[in-house]
Length: 241
Image (cartoon, rainbow, N blue to C red; front, side, top):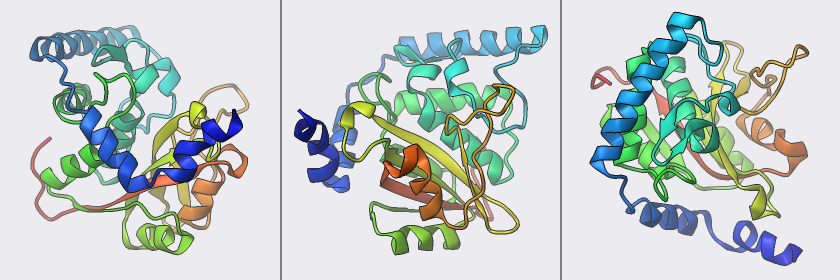
């Protein structure tokens, strides 16, 4: 059965996969559900902050997706299928935005309206991330190339990036994951929400890498394969989030 698990990542082009995800995003979440989630999430953040909850800290990268069970997205919760939302949030922080808790709930709602695949049960379609950032006025580009040169060029030309990868290029059952990659002052590339734990067991950012390609190939012992890379630069005039 190994050939069957490898069929999609090995034989389905990245462009075709993105088209399929866009099609599956046409199964819309109801406006009533979106409003209910927005209200619930707003109350959840208020309770967490008033009680000193630990799963979220203001103005810090989100590294701990598995601890976001209290926050809803579509018919599911953020720990299950919120990686694209977290990647977008982290990328906006990297670009100098200081999103409040209301900004996170609004971001969830934006993707519930446009981009949630299968009612939020799988992913946010990567092209929806690209369109969202474009609409907000950011200088944004996307590549579906799997060539190191093309991916490293995106890393060099853009200040920050969002990547979507197969966790294992030979096993679709290990699913896909979307992460933000920040760039340090020394032009090192750092993965966020990559499931890495510190010595005390807390979730933390990845270790620095010399290139965007090296950061991607560090995942899962080199088994990961890129599906798409979104490069983002700040714009002179952005639309309020």
